[in-house]
Length: 459
Image (tube, rainbow, N blue to C red):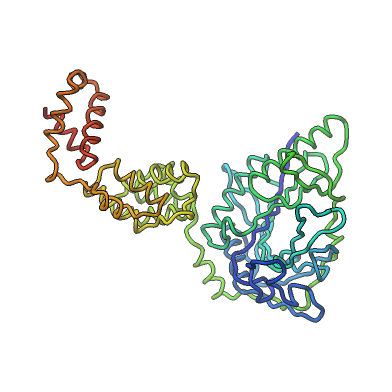
């Protein structure tokens, strides 16, 4: 029994104002960033946010969509407390873009459409309140611009859905249209077992939750079918505590929403000049960047994909690569990422930038700092925000051959470790590394490891 999955992903676009009014998209207190337009007051007239349109066009272009040069907005009618005017302004007949794709595991997942719509308000269920009696409504979210990305039912497993979302998020971060960690990204998950009805799991937040919701629904539907039952066409919700889905309502059809053209908004025309400018603003995307890193700088495919997996990392690498590509790769893909992962930090939670990293690469290239001290300075940079150059200078950790008698130190270490030295002379390379480590520790990283190796080999 084949699993068939399609996603409807709602991406909050990182604009300063809402989709059809000038209210801010951020607010500290409930119902403070509102006006007659986003509150749905009679007689209020929406005005389209140009920046939101540009962001949606960038997303559609990055997802290989056909851009519609003329489009308009419609009213999607339904009655719910989060919609003060009893309809949502969205796109139905003609979206911003359509017929695109995103490649996952060598398979093209088709993109049906990318369209713009306004976010409804948020329903707040406060702790301690009797939720069966009432909910609170915060209209700050009402009117925030969303780009909805709808796929064809081409996804074959919950794991593949997660990969699709991971790749999509990376593209959105590269485009700069989505504020990761601040903006909201939700998905409506449509799943069916071939030959049975489709079920929609509504408003799932978080990529892991999407994967878990799809796994739970897949397991539920298979269990129903195997027990001789029939899967019903319905809308369900996901409980991320019990990892189960539950019924919300019987599934509506498109006709139930009574789409009509919104007469308060004029048709939008995308000129040749405007579209050219928008397409020019789409940056080099992760896959293309990784391929270029392999070709231009000789990186392995693995290192290139790791560095290109973050726009911040790739920007730092491109700043450092002019100094020394091999040192830059090692310092970024291994040391920097290792420190970030160990401390459970993302790059944007630190003050690490290209300028600070370039200085460290140049010090390593010039042989002015040991690998150990370079790593220690990088830890301080990531965790405490202290620039590597400042940390190394303050702690007198630069290599200065004139201030240390490396050969005397090495001779003293060999004298104390004659057995290890004899093992090295017999061909044991591990013994050499052990002696180098002792010498570097004694010299506190003020000598180059290659120089220490040379002295030992000479002796």
